[in-house]
Image 1: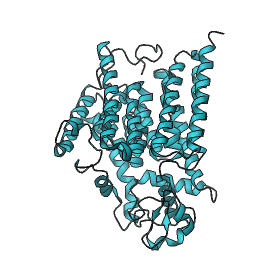
Image 2 (image 1 turned 90 degrees about the vertical axis):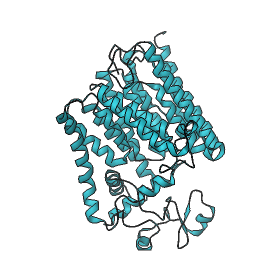
Image 3 (image 1 turned 45 degrees about the vertical axis):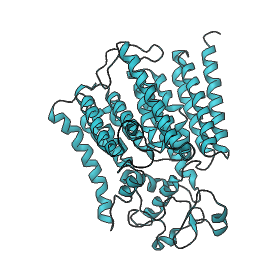
Image 4 (image 1 turned 30 degrees about the vertical axis):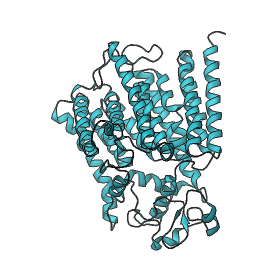
Length: 465
């Protein structure tokens, strides 16, 4: 009876988390009220993960998997709640199915008017009373954000949009992309469990499988980041055994979202020989180039789409306004922030590359990715899905504060301002730094370095991680 009690507690906490997520996503809360409910879900998530530490070993994998199914399914209970990006995905899939390059026309281009329907382009009545609609230049509205600019998504993402469109029954609307994203999320969970059963503690998979960011950002909002996460995890898992295969998978991840390019130093952890270096880098670059090539040949315009405009819109080309580089701007003049980011990331990259553990490339990848987030302080919460998966691989839970800081920046910035965003990321930095200091003072692994004792999660064996 006493041995069953931790399992019962974990199940009850998972049930509470699932119910809370379903209520949150089915409700009407937006902005700060939504953030409050989301934070409550994170509290339940943390309690469930702590309870999992005492669950008998034989019950861990079934519980992690069952919890993953329940938590992931909550993302299917409502239309996208906090982002309209998936409407662009659906449109790009439709445009490609018509034999047109998604990079050649913006959604409001009259040349594509024949592809419009009442879901993505509502009637005037819906435009007048609809939420999250954007006006069209010629009148009317659309659910697609930034309808006047070309798509920003790279080729693997565009291939995913086309595949979902081709496989989906008519009039499935948002459900098609959400269902596809749910399957990808569960595949990531399965991959993490398989890897951690052999090389660590499968309890760590719960950091991804039960994390509220997964149903909200990966499933409900159907962000294509989850596809990049799947390729990224696969790349880091195999790169130590097969450099070329790891490079290919990393190239696929980069061609899905671009952000996984930050994983390259981790994938090269401990690599000293030029031949080994090239065995990873050349396939990654070649895959990205080969996947872009068909779109280059078929498109009249640039396949980079709105990428440059997006960087400028988000304030990454300079730090005079907005919440980018928020922590650096506390101690440096605004103009110094971008070069400071470059300098610090270069130093971290070289440290991970030279001193990283080649058997655990995700450890250096987590350090590089987490550092990049803290330096850049992005305003979009779904970017942190990649970081959540890296936390699950390495077990360093203290980096999860960055995912919550991103949610604060995205949902509450209009209310709390730059100061509030800075405070959120500052708290995340303290949380990550505190975890690093604790491990260092206890004789654990230095950041990005080779394992001295490994990660412990509920008494995991030495070297686990």
